[in-house]
Each structure stands twice: as C-alpha cells, then as structure tokens.
Length: 234
Image (tube, rainbow, N blue to C red; front, side):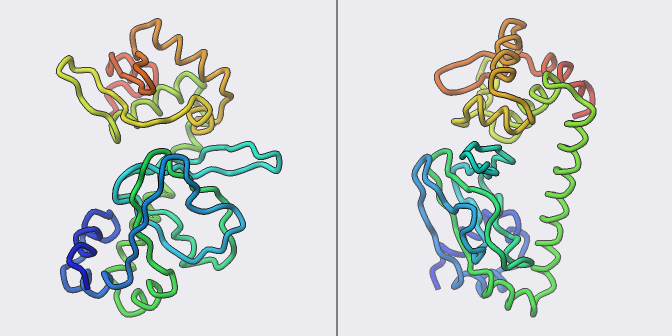
C-alpha cells in the first residue's frame, strides 16, 4: 500500500471524513489517472464500472444529442466525485465526462467499493450524504430554471463559480480560474450561446464582470448578487 494513496483519498470529499483505518483498507483499491485538457474520461454507452474522484483540475459532465450537441450538466472540481451511479445501476453511462483542464482523477472499481460498503456503515453514510447534496443542487437548479430569467440564472452561476473556483486579487476582484466556453455556460443555465454571450456583455458594460484572456473576472460581487436576486442571501 502506498502512503500517497491515503493522502489522495483525504482530498476527496466522500472519503475525507473517514478515519485512517478505513482509508488504509480503501487505498489498495485506488488507481490514479491523468487526463489532458479536452480529453474524454468516459463516453455515453461506456459501461459503468468505476467511481471517479477529482484530485486536481476540473471535469464537465454533459448530455450529448444524436447530432453531437453537448448540454453541460455540471462542472466539477477538486474533491468532487462522479460516476457513483455504478453503485446502484449497472447500465451504461448516459453522460459524457471530459477534462476541461489538465486533471488528476482517482478511480475505484464499483464492485470493490460495493463489497467494502457492505461491511462499513460509515462509507455508506458518507456516500448517502454526497448523493443527498447532489439532489439538493439539482432541485435548486430546476427551481431557478422555472422561476428565474436568463440574466438571473447567469449571474447566479457566475457567483457560484467565483465562490468555488475564484481567486481573489489585491483589488478585491475575483478571477474565475476555469477554462469554460460561452456554450458551456449556456448549457449550465439552460440557455443558448448567443443569449449567454449577449448577457455577459451586458454584465461587462455594467461593470459587474470583465474578460481577461480565457478567464472571467468578477468586479462587483454585490452587483452580481443583486442581478441574481440573491442579495443578502449568501
């Protein structure tokens, strides 16, 4: 058993709260993989066989239409887990998983993890908490799709990205350190690329955000909260 594998597991949300003894049992089951930017991790129709957890980098999950058009469902970062449906459903993947920047991902065979879960309630509880949080976020997204307009949804998404992946500058501005396209942003808020680009430009004109290279800079956090109808709610 490599000590490094235990240290990797501690960086993953689902495993981070488990004690050392449990991590020592799980560590031999872990494999580390490196994916380059834009490299596919798995495709729709690939068999569900492994649980994936991000050590570094970012991964997007997307639905793919018969014409090959992607609808981005979520963007995941360090500590996040995906592919966990393999524990409950042995069918093929329904989504496309792609690294949006160079990433390190650990994987565990679902059959091995299921055997461990059968003997350890702590891991079952940790995974249940993780699945519950995903359901909560999905409910929030559905609510916003129904009750908020594109401008509010985009402002809310930028706030979330700044919170999760933002780097604060001495000026107080926050750089969203993520290589994400306008098409990806559109998919995340249930809009079109054209409408999303127009709305981003409006935010820029209002001084809420700016563009630097491939990154988005949040210049006015309070203003963006008002645009998202979240003022004083965060």
